[in-house]
Length: 75
Image 1: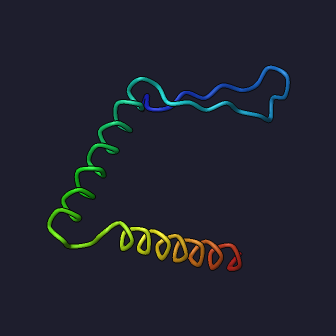
Image 2 (image 1 turned 90 degrees about the vertical axis):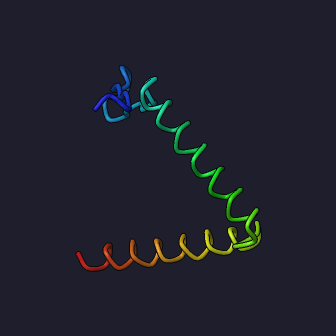
Image 3 (image 1 turned 30 degrees about the vertical axis):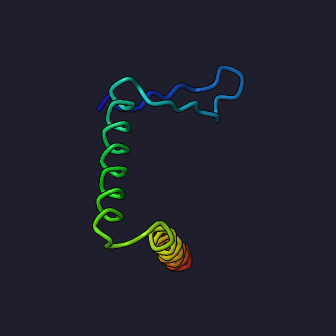
C-alpha cells in the first residue's frame, strides 16, 4: 500500500531493511498528533493524568504479553 519500503540486504539475503516511505511518515505524524491531542484532552478535563496513562499503558502491555503467550503455547 506504499506505507513501508523493504529491501533485502545485499550481503545477507535473510536480512531485510524496513523503513517508512513519505506516505508512511505522513500517517505516523497524523496518528502521533491525534494521540497527543487526546492525551491533552484527557488531562485537561481531569479524566486521567500522566500517572494514569502510564498505568493503563503498563496494563495493556501485560495483557498483550499474556495473549501472545497464550497463542504461542496453543501451537
